[in-house]
Length: 251
Image (cartoon, rainbow, N blue to C red):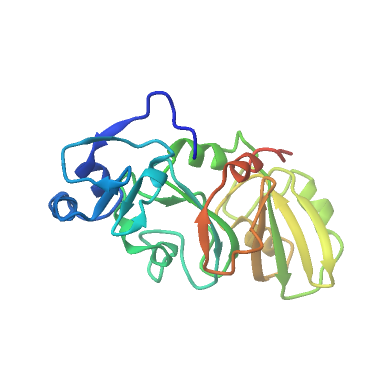
């Protein structure tokens, strides 16, 4: 069993489950009073009972016969498929629609850590942990992100020097990009590692050298790779050792 903190935070049972997306407070109260929640092996019938929600909650509580969803802070790793957006506001199907519907009602809300555009695939993290989100995306962290790139035209051989120079300025911007690592993988394919997250950065970098990205896949964030057991569209909670891997490959 996971070791719980000495003084875990606590919340009323009905508020806790409502914040985890199991329904409105009234709906959750009805579910509790009807015996739908088991806590420490017995029905939890007191809607006002204060429940500690440490990491061991998922081992102590079931909801409608299933382990309760992890409380905040909660982070998912997803193998993002093509054709979905990473925003709650952009038109089109979103990555959040791949998750259980109740997770879209969690409070605090789940958000992607950075965004992959609709056609980009690969490693995506989704979290309600604001501190983790800001640490990963902060330019000060300089966490490397490795992408595999398929191009419309063959490489000309100058890309590596240009991308590593720290002097490339993208169209519409005034500050140069930080140096990026480049590796040619084939006549029209490459790997590129960047430490920033500017808008459509990789696509714009190749556009700046006269090429066009036709396929883009994020392979690594830090030293974290997509788990081999995650097919496109699949996801699972991020494990502690994977969380650490985010920060152990800083350039």
